[in-house]
Image 1 (cartoon, rainbow, N blue to C red):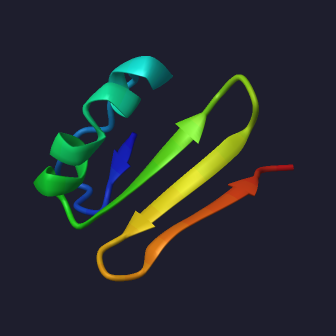
Image 2 (spheres, rainbow, N blue to C red):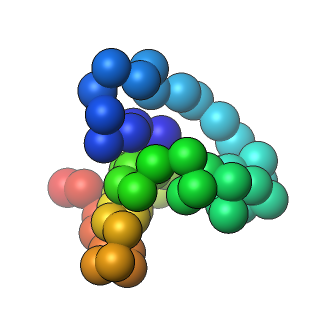
Length: 57
């Protein structure tokens, strides 16, 4: 997980942990990116914009 504020450290978490705490994660920051290393999928959350998903080649 990468936050929109680069002063906050990125963290490695299991997908189940992020999914079970998704509301809390999004309450902490209006924007963040989650990279699923096993599938190469990047999920981008933007406040008011929703989210976008794409596979990194």
